[in-house]
Length: 249
Length: 247
Image (tube, rainbow over all chains, first blue to last red; front, side, top):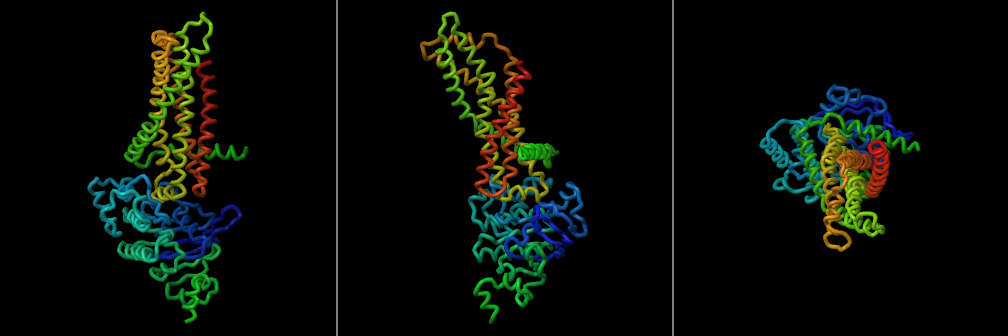
């Protein structure tokens, strides 16, 4: 479980996050949704420590992250897996080397043990016979899956996904969403997904937080989001004509 | 001025992160070997061509400049050797390497920044500055002095080829000239300079690459800045070290 309490973050005079408090539950897909510029990505980067918060606290299963030194944060980060919007695979390494990288950095496994783990992770994301290909030689969907395989290589307790299906066709996007859902349940991970894709929301959203202009505007699940009367949230959810028609049915 | 001071301060803060204890020696060593091959072997061909032709041209220019019969022709070999050992090999070749290696390093790290690969390293708890930059600096400190010695040798060979295939001076006069009044300290001086230059060639572009923000256009700008500032730094350090070591 990750608890965020009263965090604020500004860049210069521009306040991006305004007193946000959220609890992200373990074993569930926690979706952070909102329009572009609402502060979703900044929130995620603050939670993982890529940005320092101006005030407020963040707890990883009761451990206060915000006041930790670099060494203690490193221990927490070894429990975090992250899937980036563009995959963020290392260009100069093959698929196998990318997935093996965190294992080499943090474990003392033998080469055979590492290879077994790499193959397990790749098989788990439905990828086989791509070990020796470079990221540039595989499709965007495959890159995302390699990114997931790398993120789960160290059996993370916490999984962060930044717009996991952006740039993918709807069908592949759903495959990625379902994969993240399955992994969350299988390994009992606290998963936080940042998205603005309503397909993802309807497919996997268990605990949904809607951000608007840097504030937590709404919280609920995928059933309640469709019944909401909140104008701002309705504008976001029913932004397309087809969704507006759907609402009026 | 404030921007320049900000950059200098950020550069030294980045270096403080770079020289922290490595996370995993085995991975760092592997990365260093990879960089040695990439930075060293990748530059040998270019340096060979430039050194050979430059040596030949310096020899031709010196021969053509000697008009007085009172100046012995072996002076040509001496002048070529001194030019190459003191300045052309360490300084000019390092300026060329600053362009070739520097732009490469800056664009490589810059593209890693904008494609979130550096963020991915940080999320894994890895000191990304150290992991990406330290192996490059160590590799350059080992390989660039070797490249410079190789350049000195080939520059002198370029002059020898002029002696061998032209009627302007004989090979024996040229060889006598390159052996005349040889001081080993001049080579040591050149190598000391080279070590400083190697550090600049890798650390300055790494700084500009690491702090790239934006997109592809900014990678190009970082690359250009890195070449300009590392070249200027090399010239300043060259002057200071020459003043300190030779005068």
